[in-house]
Length: 156
Image 1 (cartoon, rainbow, N blue to C red):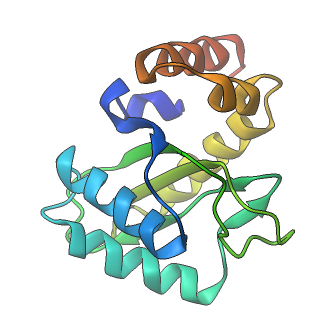
Image 2 (tube, rainbow, N blue to C red):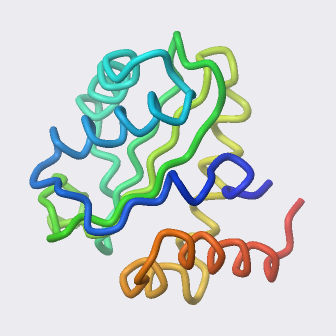
């Protein structure tokens, strides 16, 4: 499974104007609505906020992975956002995040949700991914670099 199967270059945002956790959730929720994965921003926002209230998806190392299985989501999708400045995301290591990989799936696709989270985790752990996100100059270039990384990895 490849993360890029669930996104396009238009779902990669560099220097996003987001300053806090609430704005991150709002920004990615709007992005999911814009790409057609959800009927509106509120559908995803409420679901992601509920998930974040359980435990932060700021995994440490400057990375946040907000994710949720939501009623009303019509298809799985991934959004990558790099904030213009690092953002407090209440991460497990208490460090701000500068790489956000958000994911939504329809409520009934729990298995896909877990497989896609695993694929995102493999991508984050790959050698160049975080450096590529942090140094990318364009969304299209970053999307191409991510595809290259995924193509060099073994998938099951």
